[in-house]
Length: 568
Image 1: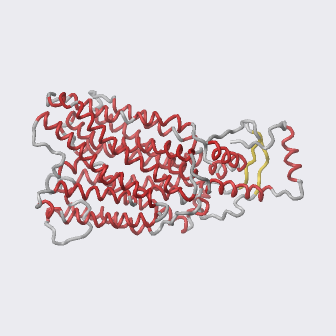
Image 2: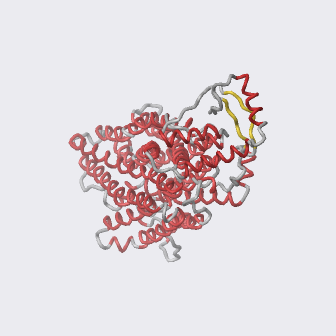
Image 3: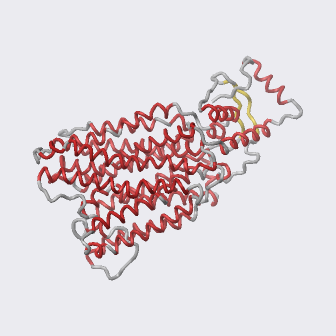
C-alpha cells in the first residue's frame, strides 16, 4: 500500500520535502508516527458497532457456513455412497475412513499454509483464494465418476483433500480479519457470530438431505436394489449444493478492505493505515493512491529469527501451547462425534429400518437425516448462541473450563449409564438427549473459545500464523479421532465401541473382551481431561486490546522512519 503525503509534489521534490520537514526543530517523526499508530488503533478499539461490522461478520460467516456444510454433509453422504458403491451396500472401513479423514488432513495443510501466507502477503490478498478452492473441489466431488483405473471413492477422497485445504485456510483468515476489525468490547461476540455460522451449515446439510430423500422417495422405493440410481442423485446434489453459498460470498471476500493492523504493523505504513481506518469506519470503503509517496516505519518485523525470539519467551510460548493443545483435545471429541453421528444413530436404533430392500434404504436415510436435524437443533446451534451471549461478560477462559468439565461429566453418564438406559427400552431417546447435551457444551465451551482466543492473543505479524498452528493442532486431533473411531467401532461386536465412548475412568473390573477398546477410549478421555489443564495456560482476553494481548511494549513500538519512496 502507499501513503499519500503530498500528491501535488513531483517525484524529484520528494527528497527535499522530507529533508525540510525533518529539519524542523520540533519535529520527531518516530514519536509522531508512534502516537498516530496508537491513536488509530484506539479508533478501531472504541468504534461503535456499524454496518461495516455486520458486513465483516456476514462475509466471514458465510464461509464458515459453507465449511461446515461441506465437512459434515459427508457423514450422511457416506451412507448414500455405501448404498450405491459399497460392497453389500456399505463402504468398507478404509473407504469410509478415507472420505471422512481426507478433509481434516486437508484442513491441517490449509491452516498452516494460509495462516503463514496471510501474515506474509496480507489478509485481503489471500481472502477469497481459499473460497475458490472450496468451490472448485466441491463441484469436482459432485461430478466424480467411476472408471476402470480410478474408482469414484478414490476420486472423492482426492477432491475432499483439496477442498479441505481451502476450508483450512478459512479458519485463520476469517478469525484474524474479524478480530482485527472488531471493537474491544464486542470482539468476542463478533468472532463468535462468525463461527456460529458453522452450526447453521451443519443443520442445513441435514435439512437438504431430508428434502432430497423425500423428493426422491418414490423413485428410491422403486429403484433396483442393486443399483439405487436415485440415491446416487441424492448424494451428488447434497454435496454439490455446497457450492452455492461460497459463490455468493466470493465477490464480497475479494472486495473486503485490508485490515489496518496489517497495513500498520506488517507493511509498516502507518499513514495509509490511519487513512484506511477513517474511511472504513465512516463509509465502509477504502482507497489507495497508487502514485502516493510511501514511508515505511522502523518497527518489529516478522522473520524466522524474530519468530523464534518471540516464542522462546515462556510467557508467549505457553499461550501457543495452550491454544494448540486445547484445540487438539477438543477436536478429538468434536469430530469423533460430528463425523460419525449417522453411525451412532444407527447403532442406537434411530437410523435403522425394519424394512428390507429399497424401502428400507429410504427409511434409513430419512431417519438419519431427521436424527441429524435433532442433534443440530437440540445441541449445536443453542450452544453457539449461548457462547455469543456470555463470551464478552463471563470471558473466554471460564467458558472453556466449564465446557471441558461438563463434557467430562456427560461422557461418564453416557459410558457407565448405557446398560441402565438400555433396560428402560428408551435408549434412543436418552442417548440422543445426552448427545445433544454434549453438543451444547462443546459449543458453549471449548469449540468456540479455541477459535476465538488464537485470533486475539498474538502479535499482528504472527497472529494468522499462530491461529493456523492452533487450528492445525485441532485437525490433528480430528484425524486421530477419526482413525481411532474407524478402527475400534466394531471391537467386541458391531457398534460395541460406541456405547462405551469417552468413559472417563479406569476400571480393573471390566470384562476382558472390552479391555482393548477401553484402553483406546481412556486415551481419548485423557486428552479431553488435559484440555482442562491446557486452558490454564491461556490468558483471559476479554476487554483487552489486541496490542495489550500481544505481550509487547506499545510505547515506542515505532523506533524510527525510513526514506520516502514513490509507489509505482
